[in-house]
Length: 507
Ligand SMILES: Nc1ncnc2c1ncn2[C@@H]1O[C@H](COP(=O)(O)OP(=O)(O)O)[C@@H](O)[C@H]1O
Ligand SMILES: [Mg+2]
Image (cartoon, rainbow, N blue to C red):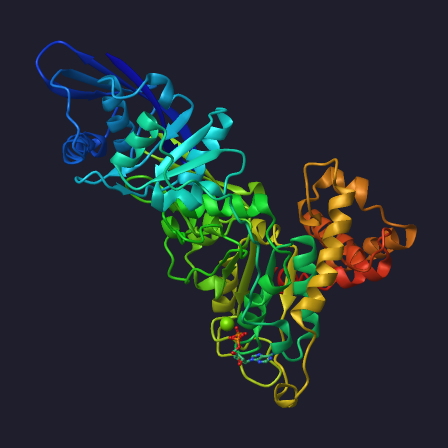
């Protein structure tokens, strides 16, 4: 007697389909699980046997072989409990084999036959949809998560008895309501809280509009952290695909609310400067965990006090800033996680914080200042389009009752600029100005003769690198888009050239 049930296992962010094959043969009663199972799967044997007995069914006293195919992929996790149990009961003839056909089944059993949620259900549902299966049967606690994926049936079950009733007698348990993907954005902070700092606010608007990475630098207490924390309030809301991608990553490690699983607010991750390499990039023992940079996917990664981070941690940003993904290598295998985030860094100009301050003296030596700033390498800074000076605000400014522009007003300009970009790049693989490479810069950022002359002078005067030159053009493209202009003018270039303070001061 034979049964085949479909399930899946996680490999990085993807789920790979696994066939759970069960064969009951004559011979000494006993169980064997083959197909590279890890310890966790061996333990599943005990849980499955107890769950079947405690649900009032009988285990066949036969020689039982369970094969998890294909054998060459490494499997882990407890999600195979349910497909194994369902397969065992199917092999004994409890229900017709066609009943399980077309379903991907996953879930962890407890000894009494109840079901516990498993991580990565969104990836499982996506794999089922890709394999053109009819649907997915999951523990009740995972049902809402699975429902986020459109175009696939979802059945949530509380225990083994419910799934048997479904397969044997067509009793449908808790039929899935369709997913309600409300994308809400609620923020407790607002740009109107920030007084003065017109130029820095303008830079944040440009960053949001063109999806440019930013570094804010200036003495302590000038509002750098405040500005960074308010960035999400002017970014466009997540669209469904972005929300799904983000939720999928959080789902892998159970970092979601099971009642309201869809992540609807743009991720904003702010790791502490004591963060380890694995904490930021991902890794660790067992299944490699995604790091902060993947949890910031489709959102913002904010690194406050940037030079206080470890050098290797800072340098690890280079790959994701370039390719929007991160590779984690572990014992011979390599996993790739998505990491497309907007980077925001904040830093003081030196260790004491007062280098270049108009009134307070800096107590750092020149060597110290250089060491502090060299934490950010040239190649890393090359990837950060906006380097913004945040000067001290006067007491008068701080005490004034002025109310700055509200986030909502700024966001409407950001949205209009984004729309221009998505129309311009609709036949391209890029979405925003920050992604403009050398070729696209030529195609979409033609300068008029005054602009060419202006930049020529700037290069001579400031000794600009080719990369810095490209950054100025990218940023000016966004400034022109905010103004609703197709032609980049000298004015746009002039403004863009101001946001590169760091390389001017350091190198
Ligand atoms: N431009 C500003 N407008 C209003 N409040 C400010 C401003 N700058 C600083 N503050 C006040 O000072 C505190 C510290 O600001 P913060 O953003 O942490 O400065 P930084 O990160 O530059 O050291 C804030 O919580 C806020 O109360
Ligand atoms: Mg701060």
